[in-house]
Amino acid sequence: MAQPANVAEALLRYGGMYGSAWRDNKMLAEVVDVTSAAEVNRIEVPIVGATRGGHKAGRETREGTIRVQKVDAKWELEIWSFMSAGLEQRRKDRDDPAVTRPKRTFDLHLKQDDPDALGLEEWVLYDCQIWRLPLGIAIADDITEREYPLTWEREEPLNAFVATRSGDYVVPNWLKGGYVADGTAPLRDF
Image 1: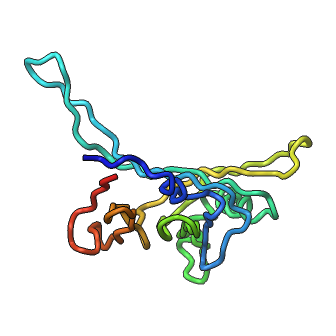
Image 2: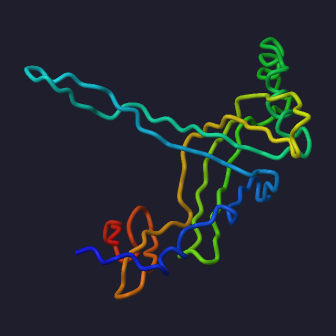
């Protein structure tokens, strides 16, 4: 039987102001928002002899955005350097062992570290790429922000837990390899 919500449990909710994004072990202080969603596409399957359909798992997609407060042209130059090299130049660079090609991907480490929440949550998005070169101005903006579409190849939780009730208290059960530390499958019971 579910226990009634405790007002103190409201204090356990994460506050977004404690989030941070890291690249190459450096905090990206200009990043104000990262949205990321890994999604399993569903394939509709007609069921013979029935008026309903079914579904099966399809391809996975990993897409999101990074929103930054503009400090310099670092993000714009990253995508511009790729876009400005023509196909012939990219082929020459590919075939010349003396040319050091810039790495197009990066890992993005996301942290949620609210001191009043149950614990630290950290994820890494591996092999990220940005896909848009946003340019322009808006004289009404107090602070210029830019948004970059983002994709990545895989993600991994570094610190994650499932909240469970232990008597009158809500406690974190830390996940190790997809399972709670005591070896049971993660469940949420409040």
